[in-house]
Structure formats: structure tokens, C-alpha cells
Image 1 (cartoon, one colour):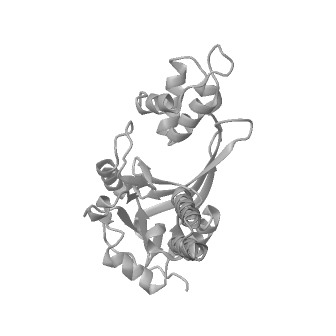
Image 2 (tube, rainbow, N blue to C red):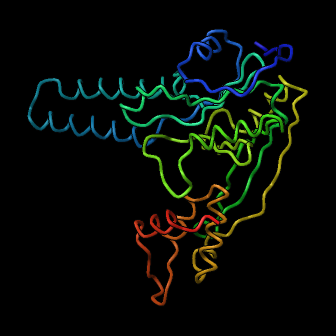
Length: 289
């Protein structure tokens, strides 16, 4: 059913939990736009391999009905993965309902993290959003074929950008560290929200088309950013290498910089490689300014 924007309301930026009653009511209403993330491929693969290993072990031990039980476990596990990826509400990244945008900043990692009362969803009223934009960039990380990266950029109006920036600064880890408790979906620069598009459903342009259809007064645009050659940057001498990779890291390409350092041979021996640990350590302590 189509989403109908309500009359403007005087509210400010608000943080919620993804399990809050307000978000549950959005799902229950059936009137929403929704972005889902795929189930982590590693977890699905690890589960399938574990079930297969148990099945073959049981078969080798001549346990009765080992193959039937293994097939049943495989079917049940993959149905769980399908439910989480297609129907499960815990897999969402962005939700728009009743003239509001609910942007999921991160998902807690680990069993203990889910007991935290910390909020992880930022809510913006439609009247607080100035525009949405698609941004794309080609990255040269390894080999001749570039990697295409896409972002959904949500630009709040100037009056609320400082509030958005304050919330991200309070929640986000320092730039030079990782956060083992959270899987981040969104980032912010000067109060503008960036969501890297990582095989989310629907496709980015389809989502923006739906937003444009339901909210015609919201400005929509597309921007192609300059190409970024991380292959060349990773093999420059210091201090140029550090300066270029620090700049790419500030753009949100820290992980791509690690792979560029790792996968491109350097030094006098033609095929000398840095270890992955060295690359991670280098990017973790690189100058941010």
C-alpha cells in the first residue's frame, strides 16, 4: 500500500532501539519502505559445513538414519537463513514509515551485546531531511578491473545536522580503532549520513525510485565521484603513501586500503608481499590528518 506523508510535526532527532514498540508498530502497519541486509555469508557457510561434518562423522560411526537426520538439519538451517534474510525483522538497515526515516546505525555483535540498553537507530522526520543522493565511485584495489562502490547519502536539513553529528560522535568508535561489539551500517560526516550499499535489498536505485514516488517533495540526485587508484597509492614511498591512504580512509575506504596493501607486491623483490597483519596494523595507526 502506498505511504502517505503526514502533516509536518515539530520533533527533533531521536535515538531508538531496533526492538522499540514504535518500530514494531511500523512493521505491523504494513505501510513502509524497507532495506534489508543479506544474512552473513560466513555464518551460513560455517553452519552448512558443520552440519555436513557431523553427518559424515555419524555416517562413519554407522549411526542409524545419519543421512536422513543430516538432510533434515541442513533443510532446517537453510530455512532459518532464508527467514532471517527475507522475512526476519532483525535484518533491516533502513525503514521509512509514516513520514519518518529510521536509520539503523549498527547491529550489536555477540550474545552479551544484545542485553545492552543502548539505542542503535536514529529517527528523522521527513521534514528534517533535505535530500537523498546516490554516490558512486570506482576503486582500483587489485588487478585491472575496478570495484564499484555505492552509497545512499541522506542529508538532514542544516538545523538538525549538528544533532546528528553529536549522536554519531558519541556512538562511533575512534577512527583508528575497530569496534568488536558492533557491525556498522551507517556513518556520518558533518551530520550527513552515509550508508555504504553492501548487496542490500532492494537495489539502491530501486529504493531511491520508491522514495521519490512516495515523497515527491524530497530532493533526489546522483553524483559520480572521481576514481580512486589504491594500487598506485599503496606502492608509493612514504610519506606520500601514508598521506594518500589516510585520505582514502577518511573517505570510508579503510578496508579497501588494507586489501590494496596486501594484494599488490612491493619492494625490490618483484613478488614481495606485506603480511595481512602488517597491513591492518599500518592502517590502524595511519595518521588521520
